[in-house]
Amino acid sequence: MKPNEFPTARRIAAILILSLGALAPAFAQDAAAGRIAWFRDAKLGIFIHFGIYSKGVGSESWAFHDGDTTYEAYMAQASSFTASNYHPDEWARLFAEAGARYAVMTSKHHDGFALWDTSLSKLNAKDASPAGRDLVGPYCEALRGQGLKVGLYFSNLDWSHPDYASVLPPGADRTEAKYRNRFGYPQGPENPEAWKRFLVFHRGQLKEISERFHPDLLWFDGDWERTDEQWGFRELRQQLLAWNPTGIVNGRIGTYGDYLTPEQYLPLVAPKGTWELCATVNDSWGFQAKDHNFKSVRMVVRMLAECAGMGGNLLLDIGPRSDGSIPDEDVAVLRGLGRWTHKNAEAIYGSVAGLPPGYFYGATTLSKAADTLYLFCFDRPNGQVAVKGIRNEIARVSVVGGPELASRKIGGAKWLNMPGVLWIDVPDSALDADATVIKVEMKGPLDLATEPKRQD
Ligand code: GLC
Image (cartoon, rainbow, N blue to C red; front, side, top):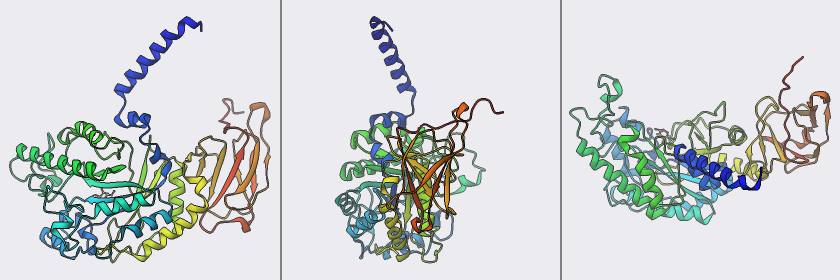
């Protein structure tokens, strides 16, 4: 290209970038702005469902919505919400010990009960429970004291607010069963004025938590009963940025979030863009005295490794009791996880998605420079593990936190530039009790073979 062609080319590129920017979803622009960078590197967060349902007899909010109990009986649980053993400093230490880089606590679930002393409703921990104080401020401080990022969950929908169940989504067919739920939808005529009042309340509470706690992450939920237009999510997104310019938001504000949040299942294929799997340690989001179906440390380690291997995060949920104490089973899983995450930190934090399927039978991550590959062995390797398709010369192979390993490439088709299989010897003595991580240092960034065009 001749030098005088540069300005034109640059102008065209700039126009292209600008016009793409205008079309791109909000999250792509934010990613470009770099606000999401800490989150992409963080890999592990702790989700905390804490509220009047933490008494442990029924599910969070859904218990009255679904008719398992009456609204009155559900709300009466507030009288046992003491938070008398609520020590957020201890929580934060435990989360850091687990290897989490952030946490997300329910500032308000679908039941409308706020954990901070909101001035916009009496339904809050200070005014409506023996806890008698704001619980969010001390949580934020404690997390920051441990160097963890602060996340706050906030339910858009509010099944207690008198103005909430006031309108239907446009074109809703009232004969559909879901519209018969009185907590979500008006059972008589619609009242658009009441909905407007609700939105003022909704924005008011969000302004309160944004300006007061400056969460690094606002974790929205419960956007499904209205359309994006009804919620006014596009405008809300701008407001959130004005109130708290560095905060990121998850994807449950319609299409205006920064990242996706698959729930309770390990994705089979990596979701597009930035993402985080939210999943419970047992089967419940909040504390449930009868739920003892806890995942083992090994299972949780595997979930984390699989998320990281697909470029995502794991947001692991625990349920403290009404007094703020964390059940022993949750603590045991977090501590066990911590042993493994600290040992294998380099393979997880700041890593990017590893090899595509077909190259290695297990999760893999890559260093940002792409010159170190981490292989997660969930099963006993039977002496050796194999990786296909690596064209690079190998500099060194070792177990993270363990010995160097012997390896050699065998086979390959030079005339097709198809490398041999890299066989790595893994003695039983080098194995980790939960998942062994093998570090493959390569000369230069990963040069991965793809299937040759011609297959004889
Ligand atoms: C679902 C549930 C809610 C829970 C949330 C966590 O949206 O409605 O109870 O808090 O998942 O992701």
